[in-house]
Length: 411
Image 1 (spheres, rainbow, N blue to C red):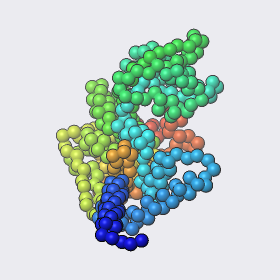
Image 2: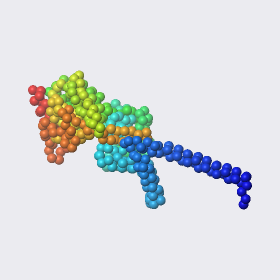
Image 3: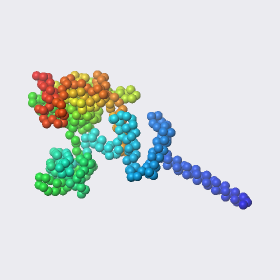
């Protein structure tokens, strides 16, 4: 074949087009890669993966998925696989309080820390005899009470779907939803041996975290089960009601309270303490943040505080501040000993990472992690008896001890 001028021009045009095509394809590939893996472009920043580590991560993850696709006998959920990888990264830190939340887990976590959700206003428990879940109590003024749900009713269907055999958590997930949306439930009503179908409109439900009562001689009792977003308002309402009944002294029960939000315990501490430090935190860079109470909301009354081995975190912040300021007597057993603070960082896909980011100290500078707080009066429950199993105050030797200690302050 002889190459003439026309052949050379065609060849030149072909090569030029081929090169342009390669460049265009490369640009597209790079653009897609940069868009879907944008973190690679920022990986060289401090406190993150290097470009090499990021590439290795993508390459290894892809190799694992390809191997599973070609060899794994069963089926798997790719999203669950990725969530497992993220959970593994958080777990590999080696800190029991640092964890990754999937979308579902993060939604439940938000409910647990805010204390509010769109629900029906019932407490439920599994009936082992029937395999169904029954209503233990109906919240006064709640949507279920308004719709006619009764204590003892057993869930049969939710929106026509049989829910027999579900766990309480699985059923609760079906019952919760956006506020002001309706759900139709079929109950079995043992009282009349009949089935009833009830439509209930979900409303904002506040989980009770504070219980209170007025005892004899002007002694008030307040028990806090957790420190959620709504807890300070519930505590203020309880304290105000007790004051209206002639409160002279207070027993504060923090037993089995595993903690919660620092901002919630800060507000409650401000109502109990004189002006001064509630707690302070120190992060990895040595930055110190101090939380203070003012003199305006000081309780100014005799105070005893019940604690046990399950009083942790925010409970210990409050108990430690009361003890250090000398405004109350701690009664019970040594507390759990969690002196770490976590921060929850949400991501754009509605997942989140909870990270241990600081240590906290009592006003006197005590770091109680792994140590706990020793009560002023140490008294344990009898062997085999737990706080939750107690039926009344009269069976509770720790409560009776706190009551007697308070009486000596009132006399």
